[in-house]
Length: 582
Image 1 (cartoon, rainbow, N blue to C red):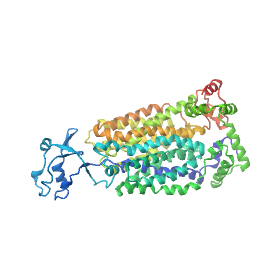
Image 2 (cartoon, rainbow, N blue to C red):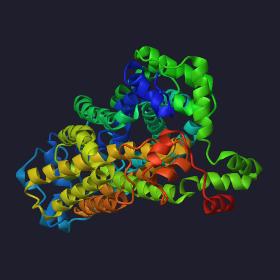
Image 3 (tube, rainbow, N blue to C red):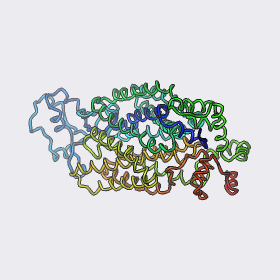
Image 4 (cartoon, rainbow, N blue to C red):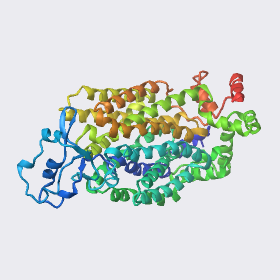
């Protein structure tokens, strides 16, 4: 039997099979569910045409267009005269309601300009595309239009809060426990928020759903921690494909179901399948090993070996091996543990807060990933929610933009394997930026070209999004991997919070705003990507010490070999002094 030098060598012996796929299953099912809610603003609360309701004319023989011709004033919008969405002419509608329609009743723009008008008291909506939306139900238009983007932003507010919490809970209580509890809460919240009668309760539900969205990070890490190192690139990138498939399905479901409450209830149904699967999924053996739960870790590894036809040492031998690996990767050794035990509560809190910037290599990785995730969030979610900005057909835009995510998530796999993570990540940002900014120079009449450029931008920013999950899981050490990934992903949520306001409010006044902001965001992402070290074909670090050995200024050619042997070099004297100061 081959000698096992570290935990990754055990996974390589087990290989890939049913057990590996089962460890990835929670992430895959979660990815098949989340786009129905993270992209919810596109179909639950889209922008629809609206105008003032004139009750005195509703029982007349006039058509809707005739009523609007008589009652709605004209407004200048970018040099074009359009019907007002928020004002109605002050006229004696009772006096004409019994009359048949005649061409003389048409109100010309000149006549309308001479007549007084007032704000609407009631609204009518164009139901030719959507039968019912959130904005229709609570009149989130005109004077209340600023409340409409909160439907989408509250979801991202929730993810921003949930990311650090889910990462902390997953590192402390385990990946499987957090995933199980979150699935139950998600089902309950998604159903109740589709039935409540108050907009404030809907927003509260969106916030909770957003917070639970963050479990995607621990679910992804659970799968990656059970994957052999030589297949992490393939699994890490292909695992994001379900997002694209769900986006396409969302466009199809929304085309068939035009009522937002019914649509959300239908989209919540797959959560039941997720809950049924959870009891059959094991806890991450790598996390169990780090927590000293060696018997459980050994049992899960032996189960994986048995399912996949591999041979591992006997359970007592495997427990001893895991204990050896755990001790060799103990962060900072006995001296570090003694310092930690002697710290007060304030010192421990400060240490936890500054953990991701504690050493030079970890600080560089954290800053680079935070920047990449933030500008990816701004651009990706901006492009995903911009169906009405870059296309006249929101269903077609959703289907095709989601279709672009399939090559975006999986098509870059051989390119990443050939050129590495850092180069491809920065290249994707750069191409996306160029495509979106080119829209500014494209004549408005070239709708097909604007649509194509938007899809190109979506393709490459999707490639960045999928790659960031892989890079983050590789660069952060096991001891803080969930926390690091979730905090990085939280930065994307801060960026995504901005997107609905850009699309719903800013774009209505400045047509060029989405292209400028999303294009510049992708351009800045290029610079942050260049800060990151290359992690291709390198082992996962279990501790901060190992991370410094791999990517720190003192890293050597033999650093990977040192980690493969399970060696965690102690901190140098200056580094220890810096740790003690913290």
